[in-house]
Length: 361
Image (tube, rainbow, N blue to C red):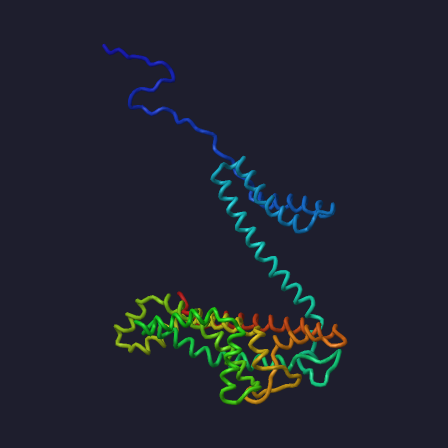
């Protein structure tokens, strides 16, 4: 005869698992919560602007209120960890907005003030014999393209070959010395590059010489370290397995570099060269003392002075003459053309990257 012992309700015996006690789970903010906070802060900011509060103070306070608002709301609903995550996200987004403010302001100012003179005459006429209204920047555009093209023609092969030597061959004291010199050249002020070109050509042609090739040499000094650094980084990220596979097939080292290493990194190399060109195409100080200024067209960089868009824009703004309005309009239009040239170079680099980068299938 078996007897069963009964246990009081709600007690748990040894080795038995009782019912799980569920703690209240934190809630979840709606997906539009950040935008709701932004909208509320923006509404308050508009009211403060109408009251007469300083716009700078409203912007700074609004950014801080946006971060604090989303953080407190998330802390009350979602908990501490989610609130920390949202706070960091809000800080990163705020930093992005702050970085975009001067860029958007610059683009708006240049486009709005330079579009007034973006007509056919601006691209087909020079300033030869023009006083006041009219004229154009044809001579400056041609000078910029010629001088920058010569600088790229000189610096790109030198920079690529230097980078190839540092990555594929360079060892010992010589490689360390080249790396140190490239680092030093990266921080050289642009005016020093112009003075170097002037001093170099005055040794052969005497004082007072001004040539287009002088400006190209000055820009070359500024371009070479940028090309070397960018190409060097692109060559370093090429996997060594590709080189070893080529060597295993009996391919020589120079052919491996040309057909494998450079071919694999051509997209990054094109981007680095574009950055180097964009770095120097707007330089004014070295071109002021190497090219000089001229109002007519000169296609020969080895004879006489030449004009360039940075110098043309500079002189149009600082020396507008008796009627300043047309000259200042030409200055802003020249700045806009410079921006369009850089944009075109960036698009060309992306096209080269798309066409020649290795395709992953």
